[in-house]
Image 1 (cartoon, rainbow, N blue to C red):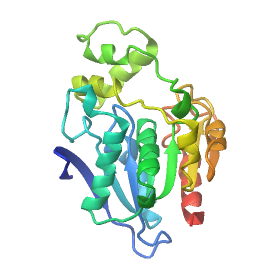
Image 2 (cartoon, helix red, strand yellow):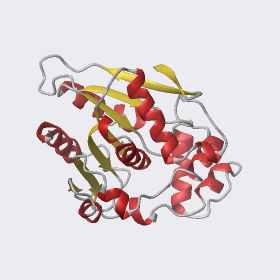
Image 3 (cartoon, rainbow, N blue to C red):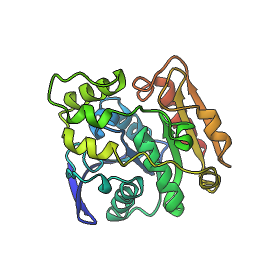
Image 4 (cartoon, rainbow, N blue to C red):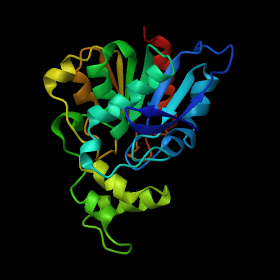
Length: 257
């Protein structure tokens, strides 16, 4: 992996060239992973990097601050969505990319939406996965995740979702204290007015069994240039690598301006 200095924070990333001659024409797409994950788990292992590069897109994927091989910070104040979107914007600028398609999943989708709102000229299209109307109303993940991450090994979690995230974080060999700081600060919502100001071409992809994301179609109604893609019989963890998800994204990218 490569790394760069993002306003004093070291951010790790990959930059994979497009397959020559494919229809994507080498256009860059930035991938932003979800909470407690990393670029490999979210995008490489699910074959997104392979499919996108084979379709002709240059794929850039970062490890968000506090995750993967990026720098670990322990102050919740370092993990606002605006700051994490700033890392993504600075990465594009570091690579000399003036404009890119941006795809995020779950927390990464929240970061991508903030990026599109604050830096619209640098986001060619917005692909939101695993996040629907809860981007507005703030519901979704229950309380207790940070406490479960910080608790000694073997301590019962306060709820099943918190237990799932603790297990997932351990499986990805994450820094549990950094993740606890992140979850305490990174769930900023956007208002209806802010969403209506995002006129970037947008695709919102949510599994029909996802109890974390909220409704994709309801979120799309609030945005002037968005449409929703339902992923049948997929929940929050299984929707990301779904075949229909990849197919829908590739079709959207081929049709966007």
